[in-house]
Amino acid sequence: MAALLELNRVSAGYGPIEVLREISLDVGEGEMVAMIGANGAGKSTMLRCISGCLRPVRGEIRFDGRGTAGVAPHELVGRGLAHAPEGRRIFPRLTVAENLELGAYRRRDRDAIERDVHSVYELFPVLRERRHQAGGTLSGGEQQMLALARAWMARPRLLLLDEPSLGLAPRVSEKVFEVLRRWHGEGMAILLVEQNARQALAISERAYVLEHGEIRLSGPARELAADPRVQQAYLGA
Ligand code: ATP
Image 1 (cartoon, rainbow, N blue to C red):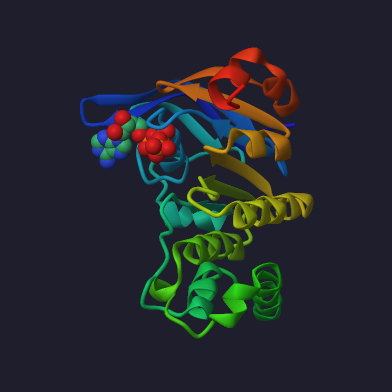
Image 2 (image 1 turned 90 degrees about the vertical axis):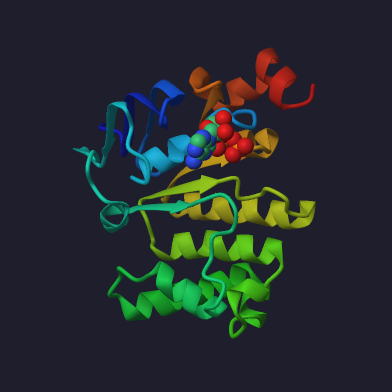
């Protein structure tokens, strides 16, 4: 079966700085894949390439069987790819409800959108409480939940997540992973970039380890979690 997302020897960087070197990876339909790696390894850069925000210098990216070179980010959203970037990028002046609506801006299924908003409020009751509040007035953790939920509102086939648990209190972080497990269970493919390697490996089927812009290890998440190299470098063993 063809992969939903495929990277074939992708290299990318910023001007003269090469950040990613010959990255090859794939994510299958409905699969949850984790990408772990230290700060500065290039994880966010890789997600930016996939979502069309940064053009690779070499190599090819295919989504749903088609190359993405020269395709604008919003067109990729239309094809079923949503990206929740690091750092709580919400619209601060719009209300929580308006932020969620915007996540669904390409959809025409009004009833289903309303059901999905309702479902977000069930998962994150604090967002319901604050639904009429401007996004910018939420706490950092709440903004992070909103950014995650907004990306999900696009109902993508592949959700790219950049550090969704970063800086969250342990209880909130647990909740985020629980929600991701649920969305994955509903059939959504997720590429999860995470500092919290333990949690990421626990909920993913496969994983990649990125070091200095190169894929160093890959395989079933369970095997990587048992690998002494991963344990030492990422699991604090
Ligand atoms: P982190 O978890 O800290 O965000 P990361 O693995 O996501 O790490 P990237 O953000 O992709 O890493 O950064 C990889 C390298 O690229 C770093 O050395 C960083 O300084 C550099 N970099 C990132 N964004 C830019 C930019 N816009 N211009 C120049 N260099 C950049």
